Length: 108
Image 1: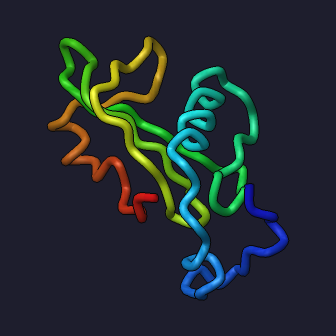
Image 2 (image 1 turned 90 degrees about the vertical axis):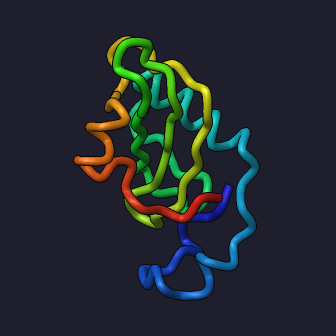
């Protein structure tokens, strides 16, 4: 995991952009922690504890995809064919488009 001391506040800088992409397993582990309501889950890229996630799918089945992203570095990942568990953040495909979810981020 990256050392948070290495990340510059200038998100346009090369230091953050040049980091190697973390493997999908790190994003999946972070998503699992968020779903278990673990506080302060760190981003696999910048180590900031501000990860967000949302499931987007068909309202009736709650099947679609899930995205996870950092509000700090705007890096993230998505997993397809996911069923949103009860209580998880969820938007239908139509509502997600109207609400601008998920937000723009760089897919790792």
